[in-house]
Image (tube, rainbow, N blue to C red):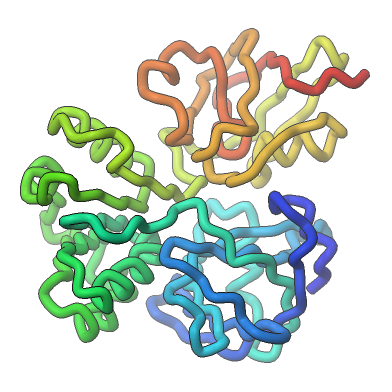
Length: 332
């Protein structure tokens, strides 16, 4: 796999070769991949992710995957779910065989765990368990008080539940949608010790429900931490057109690419970092929308999203029409 795909990571100087040591099916659509870097593995704090160079058709690109543990044994472990509406990264990763040569970057951390709090609530939805798996193990080793609530559509989708239960015992609570289970977020937040923190990773709907319940609870906003999939929205992805009058550009965003990727490919200067709708660096001003803006980020509040004044180009899309924007690029 070529390592020239590095430009989509915030920094491009730490790319290095690695080898896929082994793979294992956790469920029919989730695979565990063990990646062995060349040289020593840098330690990974809980919440860290690894950049991996991938090929989407004939185009090099990168994807970020949360690490399941610290990599202290010299091996990085990730779990990748093959998504039916994937932009191509998960299909590529599932097609790799043991021994494959990889290009990796990191680890980096935009979802760091704060130590020393009086209590922790970890909430995972589906494949969102991956960063919280590492957090749960770290908190368990530290003897910290915590609960891990792990929800999935079916019992089969609880990919890491058996491993976690063997390691953290009854601190893990699983919830299965198909069996009528639902996480009671207000009750879980109420049970959290004063001064405690909550860490969540899952689909957009879960994130919004958690943020609403947290606000109602009156707890400090900074004590609620998110990581998102960066792929889920209220509408199915479809192609749409982006117009930038100042640059005399009209750009078509394909179903399987992000708006940020399309802008970059068209030579529009963009600033970005997380590429998951969390940091807000890639936002642009909306001048006009003749379709519905599907805000998929967790950077803007619900009130800000309702104004359709800006959007995060790394994850958000438009359905049923196009959009006219302005960007920070003053060249041309």
